Length: 362
Image 1 (cartoon, rainbow, N blue to C red):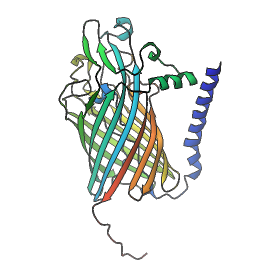
Image 2 (cartoon, rainbow, N blue to C red; image 1 turned 30 degrees about the vertical axis):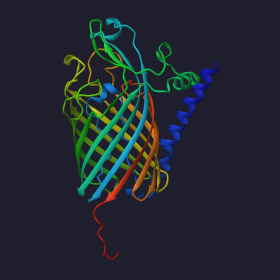
Image 3 (tube, helix red, strand yellow; image 1 turned 180 degrees about the vertical axis):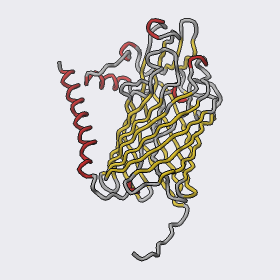
Image 4 (tube, rainbow, N blue to C red; image 1 turned 45 degrees about the horizontal axis):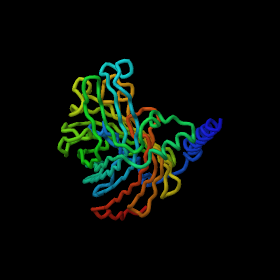
């Protein structure tokens, strides 16, 4: 049972890694930490196509930038997903009789710009350029799954490196897409106001409002002409070298252009959690979970699930105002996110206002 041994080894390693990651900082909570050293959560870069048409609030800290700061960040993510159904079946796929095929690789480029005209107030925008294609990595991913004893689902039953994004019922095909495509589906515009600046014990609280404005003409299942809106609550708690951040909100979303209206909800609940552990002044271990409830109510056992991505990696301060992030993302149980991916990103902060000199004597 060599596969079982490998699986046990991997899961044991992940368990021990989790214990070290989340419990080791407890002994350091008494340390005095400069809170400006924290670098924040990962942006999700969720390229799952059926969720991409709706608003996608990215994980945030509750704190805002200093007045007069402009930050520009670019995140590149390469992700793979592979899921196939067979023929539509009411017994298997619910009242819609939906059979779903989501097989792709995607390169996502997320550009984020943020400006703080005054303390406690951020304005921000986000835009994504995505390229979907048949990909290269199906054989390597299947070999990885087999080596550690993980399920390949239905990957073994279909050709490798194929682009197929299709939803069909017994009576019709909602959409079927097999051609490589480049799209800029939307721009997200938002504002964040810090209601409770960081207190002595390290707690901060803010609210954000975000609008998704479509940019593309509607030509494929990755795009939507609907205008979506979200309201988010954000909270931080600093515990020594560890910063915990959480986001919870409510979003109003428009209809999908490719899924019948009776199977789409107008409300979704986006939420996120971030764990950041400073390992020195310029290096941090970061774990981010980015999730949203499903906008669909088709009865399909996969599509109606919560969508969430788990991101683990590091952030490093390369210069005073330049931060790099590097890591991987994984979908374990919820389906509506890329199966696996890797990302790299950079954030540059530009102070547009010269800092005031403090002449007060201590």
